[in-house]
Image (cartoon, rainbow, N blue to C red; front, side, top):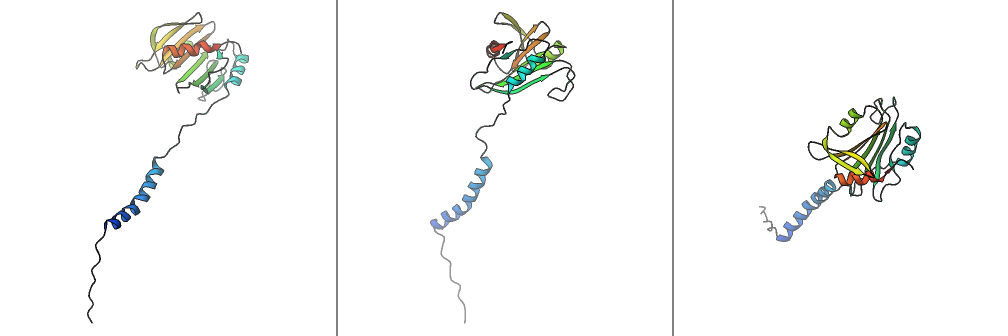
Length: 187
């Protein structure tokens, strides 16, 4: 008895499409898992009003803070550090420092810093060694304009009686001036 091999039928277009689907479905699922991410990053907000109140009670200078931040803005940093206490980086503070950082409704970060000791060193550090760029007037007060060498970060600096205030951000001077215009010494 001799066995005869039977010829297999030729694959049809339907067979090729089914084979392709068997391969592509797991690939598509894998690709979807790798490319999906969070819709919007979450931003940690802080209770800045309580920190501002504590700073106002303890600071040897008049603390500036907004009565309220505009709708859509989020406070992301608020700290009050007394001389000799650990600052937010864990280092012993050489100055009394009030700090408030906010994200605007356009996700632009603005920061307010007030210090009472070693202001020149602090301004240099807080402004990333920015250079003079003129003067702004806000509510009758003169603020020195500073800009970094890369023209990215701007700052407004006001030296008052026993306190130096620095407002910085990767923003225009007009945006910084608008933020300064929100600042008050009273609650």
